[in-house]
Length: 405
Image 1 (tube, rainbow, N blue to C red):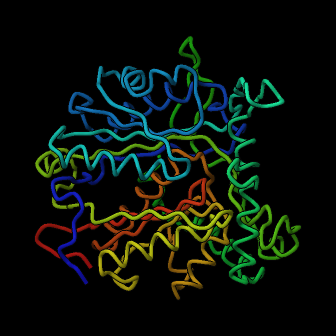
Image 2 (spheres, one colour):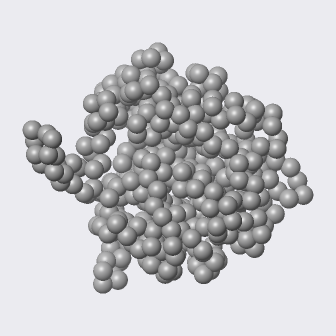
Image 3 (cartoon, rainbow, N blue to C red):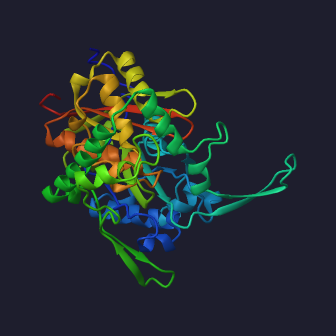
């Protein structure tokens, strides 16, 4: 085990300077009616205020989103203006990996000395996703219209397969048992509702008002709308859409945002309400698996990361993953010989939904908060992304004067 592994030794994530909206399912909330970039900037300003972080501390902004929004051409500078600051910055997009990539890029900004306080803001609105019209001079169909979310979910232009097909293919390859996949999904719902009942999610998720252009309230986002309790019997009775895939064992599209800061060690101590907690970047890994086998790619990314660092899963205090299909967790458990009940103990995207851009950002915030409750340790975060990509990141939580687990 390589105890001294550290990817960005000059970068930190200040504890307690983060926050996320709830993730209402698509078309279930007032978020369906707003410019999500503008909302995200204003929401970040609100969250910083609640965390008692002056927006004037920000030096740079990295935003991540995947669904086109009105005036996206202006990206980070426009969102920064909605935040109330005239900041430079840029936009990153890598499908479902976006939320983690934005955090990693912020770490690189601090590591190089370019900026000491970088804001990370990830967001997406799948509701009423835009339709683009594309001229195709080389095609028999000279003009093509593309619904950004739904057409891309249903068709990978490199393989001509849908995302659900990748789940079925991976399930058949790894010879998964439908009953176990149902069991995993049922467990994930229980974990989410237990975390909610304990008050854990209240420390991370911030109720936010949605305003119209006149400044009047359209609605309040204070719940992961669309999440319902499922019974094991109901899961067993659901129709199989593909091998081991049902409506109860896959996630749903949603809307939302999540934000955190990445800073120098000195700024982390200054801005955090608990400066004794140190959060470091340890390592990252990415892979691309064989075509139409997306759900196995996160497992391969974790294998690559562990090989690079010398750590094992036994060294992890917290294991969290983006699991659009419960099949993802089943494959990870089977290949890595890891108990799936020990993963995602405070909730996951299988249950609370998938707005794409902020999904892994919220998962990271949950994982770091869980590690603090445990007294520190390594936090492993991983997930899949369109194009059969897997990504994994490793973070270390310690307390000065103590040691991580």
